[in-house]
Length: 79
Image (cartoon, rainbow, N blue to C red):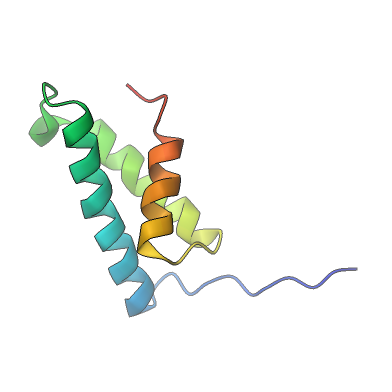
């Protein structure tokens, strides 16, 4: 039987800061890709991005750049 890494502490200040940086960077990238969308009122997309980043962090992705890249990939088909 293989060993598993312990799950990350989702309340770790460093992880929370990485997720926040990833959210901001991903949101900026999404706005650049779709300049005609009303991002100020798109709560559904904000929630989807938050969920995506939370799931990635829970899976052990802790680097803000990696979080951003994986989130963009996960949202690629979302409209």
